[in-house]
Length: 143
Image 1 (cartoon, one colour):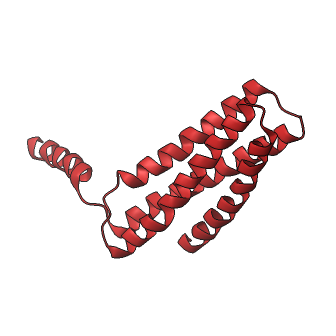
Image 2 (cartoon, helix red, strand yellow; image 1 turned 180 degrees about the horizontal axis):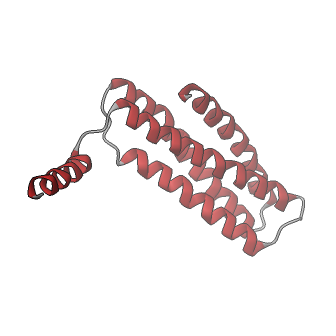
Image 3 (cartoon, helix red, strand yellow; image 1 turned 180 degrees about the vertical axis):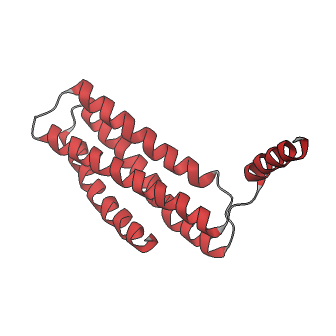
């Protein structure tokens, strides 16, 4: 009994400190890209709705705050993961700039909405379309 409890505890400790495999890292990146893609789509829809005058401030703020948090978590998940090999490094280096651009554009959209700057809202929403297309392409390559 004592040996089996020790084995379970050792397994729990090892899973917390064992290096990630390339497959695990790739899975983390895929999940992060999916989450960012969803957030970018939601932010874009919010911007388009606001430009048509069909939304209101508190709703927009809440939606964009959730989108910002989701993208920030996606970035953190990748940054905090051990990169196990060269292919994983290349993948990280491809994805992180897209996630950072997503965060920037979502933030710009929020600022534009809070300042009632239609030009800034339109530019951010347009930028989100481009980053969404690139995230979709990366996600397709991961599958």
